[in-house]
Length: 206
Ligand SMILES: [Zn+2]
Image 1: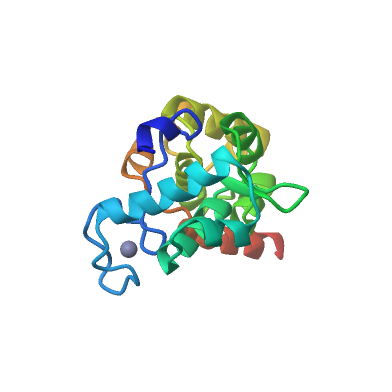
Image 2 (image 1 turned 60 degrees about the vertical axis):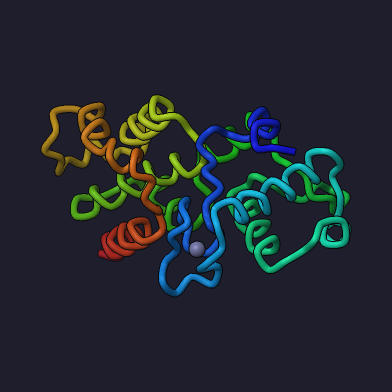
């Protein structure tokens, strides 16, 4: 099965990143546990996993038995589960999450630092990190740029963030547009989200 066959079920933005350092080339981080694995090997581990669960949802044990299992497969499966691309159904079978369902679920970020930012809104002093982290999250969740922009603009209004001030831009649209490079370069959201959460929680305690 080739990658094209899977594209129907996968958001176009999924770049088959290395499950350890997230590279999408042959060049891994120096301390990556999969350093030396070629792009093709990483991609085919994902494709094996996705093709199997899309054909027939099955428990993890069956997946390990049915594929020529490796630590790379295990790491790729963890990433797919972490990103809600694969999950366990009520009978314990792993299945590919349909893109529509995934989109609905991910519009409200689930990991804790992002959830705090999403629910409480940002405060002056962490706007840059908060907006950066949300854009990076929506990008990694497979949303298009237009969808990402809309989601972040809506959040700026609904979370009261824009009303709190502290922005140089004249309106939320411009603010988000000015951060388009975050989307295009596919940065991770974790560090920025954590930094923003720390500021928000410090602010809350005051
Ligand atoms: Zn790597």
